[in-house]
Each structure stands twice: as C-alpha cells, then as structure tokens.
Amino acid sequence: MIDAYWIEVNPKDYLYENWPGNDGGKTCLLFIMPMNSPMNILGMPAHVDYYTVHDPKTGIVKWAPHKNSKKMDLQPGVQPTQKFLKIGSTGPSPT
Image 1 (cartoon, rainbow, N blue to C red):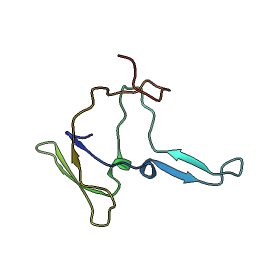
Image 2: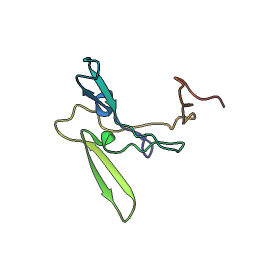
Image 3: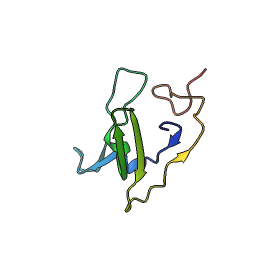
Image 4: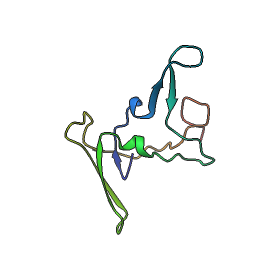
C-alpha cells in the first residue's frame, strides 16, 4: 500500500530464477536486501510494469500501469492495522 492505494506486486517481480544451482538444480534469488530496520525499501521491483512520475517539489509520486502491463490500476484501500511480520513467522506478529 502506497499513499492509501494498493499496488500490484507479483512474485516474478521479486524473484529471479538462476539456474543451474550449485547442485545442478534451479535456484532462485529474492530481490529484497536485508536491512537492520523495522522496514524494507521496495525499490525497483515494485516499479515493474508501472509508469511512475515523481514530483520533487511536492514529494508526490503517481503510479499507473503502462499500456502493455497486465497489472490493474491502483486500487484505493484501507490501511491494515497490523503492519509488520515477526522475522521468521508466517503470520501477524503478536500485539
């Protein structure tokens, strides 16, 4: 969610198949860099298939799928109350 709008980010945007691996099988690379922070920076993979316009004076960024993109227009939404996952978990962290 960016500025009260959901953007579509698919697994293929953040995964890169790298084959063969050391054992001869396929391996995948995840395009998220570890940080010593309670958040991650989305970076370029979140921009795949979108045009973005950055206004440096106002700090506003507008997003729209390009004409050949299969992604939907940004959808307005409600910000989730749970924001972070506990490292190593598959569900919301305890409150």
